[in-house]
Image 1 (spheres, rainbow, N blue to C red):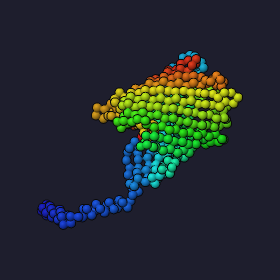
Image 2 (image 1 turned 180 degrees about the vertical axis):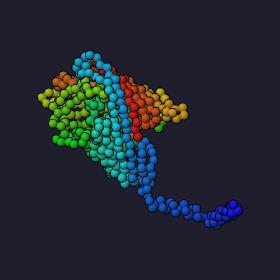
Image 3 (image 1 turned 90 degrees about the vertical axis):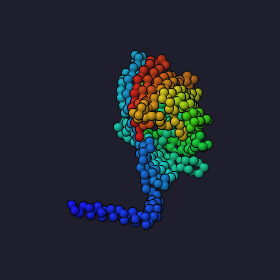
Image 4 (image 1 turned 30 degrees about the vertical axis):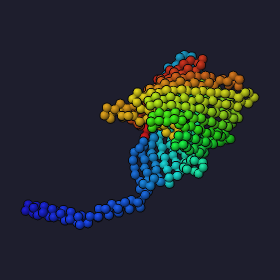
Length: 421
């Protein structure tokens, strides 16, 4: 125990000596910082890992970027159909499903080459979704995209299903929109990110795997932009126009759709197979955001060349309105709508998340008596309630009334729980 005071004295002398050495060399700390900075500059490819709407990895020089993410959507539906509809299309049963279960990795190489590989496992086996590569800032032509991705057609189609207002897109989507196909496209942004354009050549393909055979092709393009924007996007006016010229596979095409309920396999309107050498489709789109209020609508028309008969004209439209009860707005990015950000997340302090109500009317007319096409006429009315617990978690409720002309009526109550990362 006698050695304990000696130890204290020696320790104090050591500390004092250390302080003296620091004071004796006041620039040593600066030298160390400078040496550390020089060391870091020699390793610009060191990566930092962080969370921003997903898991991100970036190199210090910004030449390499990677992101890993996915989404899960689980649906339940309770269906009620009248006797006439069930006599024509069979029983409409209640059900539940994993609507989507996707994983993806995307990235940027040397700040010029981009890629994305996204697969959906909801069916039990991987299905191709966005699987493409691209080259940014190609002189004169903008940005190049090659692979399997969405054709540039329709605001509703190009808004991710993570961000659409209702559980399912309108009747127009399955009837007229081309969705994803193999293709080559150019796209760019102009006028300070207020004008967006894209054009590409595509081949109709299956998703698993995306393989094409035959002479089918499509030329598809879209121009869209903001005519007015204020308050950093809380108020805006969007207009857009899409066009697609299509050469159907085996000179045949079919227009049909299920109601705005995925948990039914019944297509209440269906043209059957139409023999056609060429199809031209046009789509007009408009949207207004005025704080918590949002209005959106689209009109689509298909001109179908029918041998030995007048061309068939088929069309449809939808109009929707939504309102955030908690004061948020629909964010807009790159020519479509993006992630909703609640003012206060659920269970953070007194936060209740973001609450949104919405209603939509949509219809398709697949009849053209002059061309001998009798695919039917259908109207859908959908009411929606969305609860955004935070930017990545959403609960949804939809009530759908589907009314195919002279074919009965379907009422559906649907629920979804969604997580994306």
